Length: 172
Image (cartoon, rainbow, N blue to C red; front, side, top):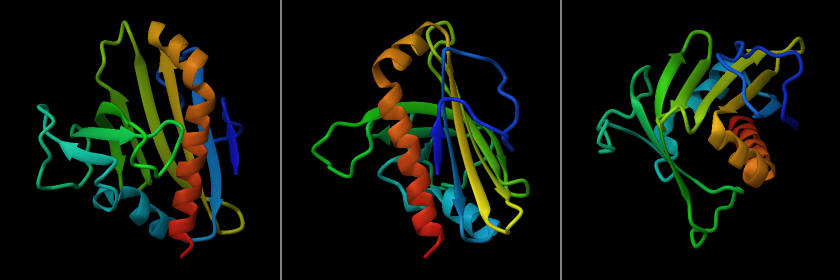
């Protein structure tokens, strides 16, 4: 498992902008790409942390991710399963979702002068037939400096935990 602030050789698309902080993780998973994608893209399996909603944040009956839909996330940064620890809410819009290429992305909906954040998650097949999960989030604008100074280590822990959880569930 590789966690860093900048990706090595990658299957991720080029970022649409740069910023002072980028979180990145890469995990090789011993499972077929379609199985890993089924786990990653099944938002109904983690309703306590991410729900597809309308623009007013009301949950939709159809929890199938698609470009243009909104995503309300409750996250623990750093990662924990302890419900007594408060969560951070993020309201995002899905900007890319492709079952064929196994790619999804979303961006935050805060004013871009304050914070730009775009997260990509991509699956690819390695030379030895495993699935490589990569995720990157680029943080830009003035708020990105606050994230870099106060949350960068915790965000990298969260990215790592997501990769480990995806690997564990997919390899079952």
